[in-house]
Image (cartoon, rainbow, N blue to C red):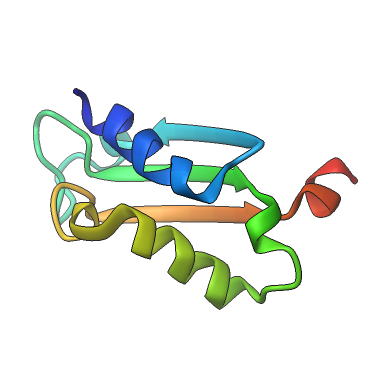
Length: 90
């Protein structure tokens, strides 16, 4: 299983209706926490009804909790856009 697969599998607990995950590790080559194989710097867009009525900090905490120890290793940086379906649908 790849790191991306593991991230997606763990985020399934939030029942996302939309999920985009981009490995941006190559953009951070030479930066602290970057490794030659990538899988360290990620950009996440996630849409879930579980985020409805929750502030940004609580939404991010839900994502961190779902990812567990991946947030310590191998993930070094994670940019999160967490929206409810109403916010994402416009």
